[in-house]
Length: 223
Image 1 (cartoon, rainbow, N blue to C red):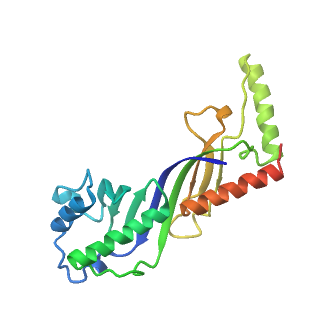
Image 2: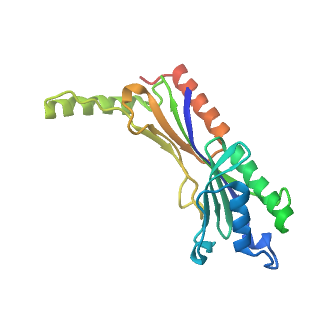
Image 3: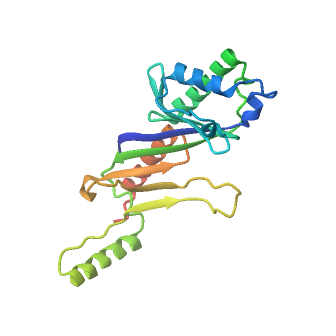
């Protein structure tokens, strides 16, 4: 497996924003101005309507040191930080922003205050293994479909597996978790062996599982 790009690395911290200012002493417009100045965000809330945490307050395209930030989002019960490097970076940057806010504005934040994090990792990668052909029956179905369509259309038509998804029963928990999916990369020919994958996992764990899956397919090919 060869990593092509980290497309999205999102860290989600579950915390009530009311807890960061228990007595409402933080003047939000001032906080926003300082966040923009400190982290050089290029798009940020400017009107009172855009300060509505129930709908989400978003800051786009910023940086901290040499690390770039794609998005910082603030909702009533979650904080979201997105980069294109890794979910580890995203989580670290989010916590660094909170520590900065505690020092500069007196936010009620201390390390470890966020008890639960969630992640979304989007990657593109190359693989020379038949990673989407995970069933002999599915491969036969693709071959038969290709043959029948070629006869129907009077031209060569080749069907192959295009995606693979695993997920949980959405009725088994109140809030859904994103599935783990692998699909062929849009705008890339099948012959390029380029894929896209999304997982609700830290970036490095996501990569590790894809590598393990590819190795397993190579050891036990279904074709």
